[in-house]
Length: 56
Image (cartoon, rainbow, N blue to C red; front, top):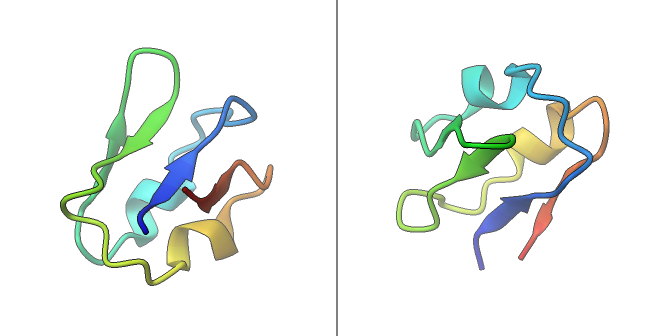
């Protein structure tokens, strides 16, 4: 199951820079993860300073 970014996201961009599959991009309100590109590695969740990323 792909990771998702919740409303606690402050759009710092840390997760986007760390994603090995470039599955993360800036959305309308905060960063978003493309579930088709996400390989569930968890790197994004590990580096998120606000804990806004979790498995969906």
